[in-house]
Amino acid sequence: MPDELTDETTGEPAVVNGEPYPLRGPVPVTDLVARLVPAAIVDGVPRGVAVAVDDAVVPRGAWDRTEIRPGMRVEVVTAVQGG
Amino acid sequence: MPTATTPANGDTPLTIAGTPLGSRLVMGTGGAASLLALADALTASGTELTTVAMRRVARPEPRTGQDARAEGGDTSVWAMLERLGIRALPNTAGCFTVREAVLTAQLAREACGTDWVKLEVIADDTTLLPDPAGTVEAARILVRDGFTVLPYTNDDPVTARHLADAGCAAVMPLGSPIGSGLGIANPRNIEAIAAASPVPVILDAGIGTASDAALAMELGCAGVLLATAVTRAADPVRMARAMRLAVEAGYDAARAGRMPRREGALASSPTDGRVAVGGAPAPGARDNLDLAL
Figure 1: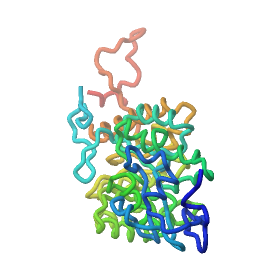
Figure 2: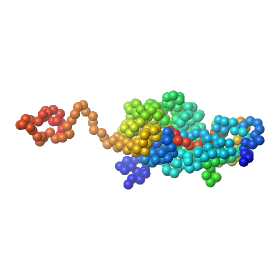
Figure 3: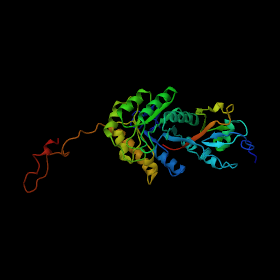
Figure 4: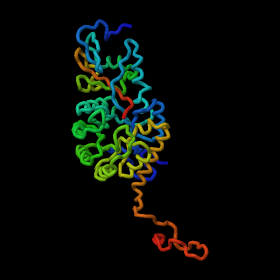
């Protein structure tokens, strides 16, 4: 299966959860989340997941229009057991 | 039959920021062997508020995505709490700076759909003690940002007062270090915090067994937060039930008006009409038995 996010990567990657994430071009946050945590998307709506880009939370309503570009630092988090 | 938010004795429920909770026991989810075991323990505890941590999602293996499936959907702790109808209290566990804690709280609000947060700003990774200055500073920022802040703090009455003054919805002093199970190291401070606090005081961290939880309530706490005392007990479900009963028992005891302490014994049976053997007067008639009326 071709991977439109990571094939033919060129240039600087983004940093997703502390690791380099190769980019072919700008990627909307929505697509990144769908790729990282497909099971968190229920009926097209992401549940229990949040995203920060360069230390600022991206509200869910802005995921479609927020693009991940080279050099951006992205955190994708979810609730886990703890505390 | 009491409803979820009406205690059997008609007392007011634990109320955080105007929201009544049906249980004064707040559970954590850390340390459980499995989600199934955790669900059983949470149910047995009767808790209606349960902490979760925020962590990076696992990166899927290239082109399979199998790893990620464990992080979302029906198998996640998040989905489990929704299924059990337990309110999630995201925490900022593992944050050592104000900035980390604030961003983690903001991510939690987005991910969990709640503006409640258990604020933790930890001083170092050895003691895991709260950093008082950082905690107060982060609390101020988060309150200003619209959060309902429940800060984890030391057993210091002055820090607790600063946190309440900052607008926190509760203060959560430790009994003893996280995960130690050492109980309440400084009961007089906990009592002083509870007596002075304008917001609910929830004893957080250090609970090892049921008597610790009962003591916290007897000292005047409005609730108890614990996790590993249950999840790392040999029988977590049974310990969860013990904790539920202990919190209820301690709450009632604190409000029942305990008997005064006294030096020495005091008989509780009547002094008159005692049998005599061989015509001799019963021994001890001039002693403290005279006081029992």
